[in-house]
Image (cartoon, rainbow, N blue to C red; front, side, top):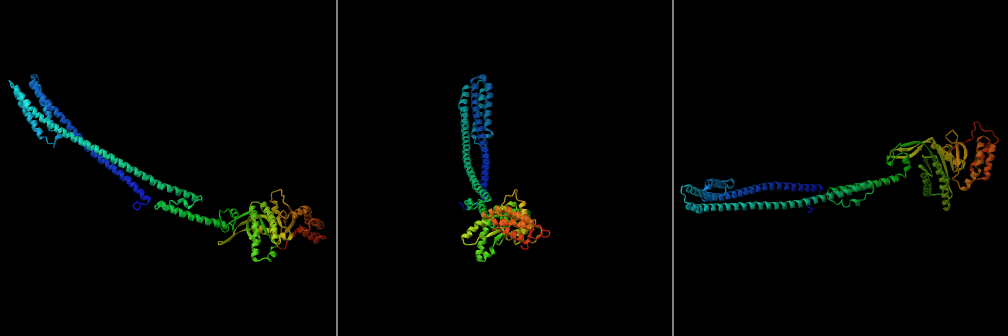
Length: 553
């Protein structure tokens, strides 16, 4: 059956509509045919009914004519009037015999009997009009001649009546049969119509249910929750919806796979260009990044690297060096992200990071990084490796961050004299023997009042700049014992720095001696003490501002 039944929805719907139209056309034609047939049958019934009516009137007129003839010789006073009644009634009989309804009917015998009856009647009335009528002869004519003729006429008209009545009954029976036949046809049409309506409902459900599934699949695809089982029932179909289901499934799986690959790509790309960097550049994804995209703003920059790593790496293989640096960076890099910063680039065992949303973020990240290094040193000690230290420098100022390179190879970077200055500040940790230095500009933009564990380092002129830069050591990230000694000696240290800046080298040296008496490991105090010893007993140099001039980076 399925071989001959169309698989196409369009073809099935066309077939369904065609069947409905054909059924409607057949019902309409049948109605027209039945109407014409009923009209013809009703015409016949009307004609037979009229014929029966005329037949009945003729028979009644014949009987009245007989009665009028008898009355003429029974009572003489009625004779004149009965003549007229007789002829009037016989005329009614003749009207019937020659009526249109009896055309093409075998009534010749009846007409001959009528003529005979009239001839006998003429003889009867001629004798009756004589002076001395022979009533015995009149009676014989009436009884033996006129009445038998009238009887024969009545019988023939009665036969005609019964024939017409039988024909009428036959027509009525035919109409009844036609009505019953049409009722059967109507019932069959209703059954066929019901079957077609059921077919229409089935086709509607056959179409609407897959469409619901397709709609749900598309919505699920839009919501990224599509799975092939959603169209498992529609895919095997051989009609248009099956083709559409296969197309939607193929498209969904292809796009889903493409989206998965895209997500994997974007996830992998974030390892090279972090999502925070994209947000800072106001880009939705890495695919939107273009060469030259940048943002100019005032922000904090951090440089950091491992102190003494070069000598340490000489005792390691290349792979050990590689693994060690990656292990260190995996520990400290999340700290940058935690404090709303992002790493612009790695510099071997060091890094450069920016903090666009707050200076305090950079300082707090630097402190936490120093504390993380202390924890890492415990791990290194267990491995039998020497402890490491880091140098951290933080500065704040206007800069431009964006994409540099060329179309086939680009990377993020930051450009500004302040970036270079931050690198110099980080390098000063080697000179001062400190771990973390922030610039005076950074301190001024910190939320006030500043409660950090820190002390002033005085002023320095870094290589490449002529303007002295105020600097501060943040020692909150040092081991607790060292941080405590910094707290105890901070007043003497900062007094010594102030005296040094004012050119009072002897008094400054005494202040730094007091610091070293309590904290012999304070390398910065020892540095200043040596500077004071070199300058002690001499007048302050011309244009002295207390800044230490750095000849190296």
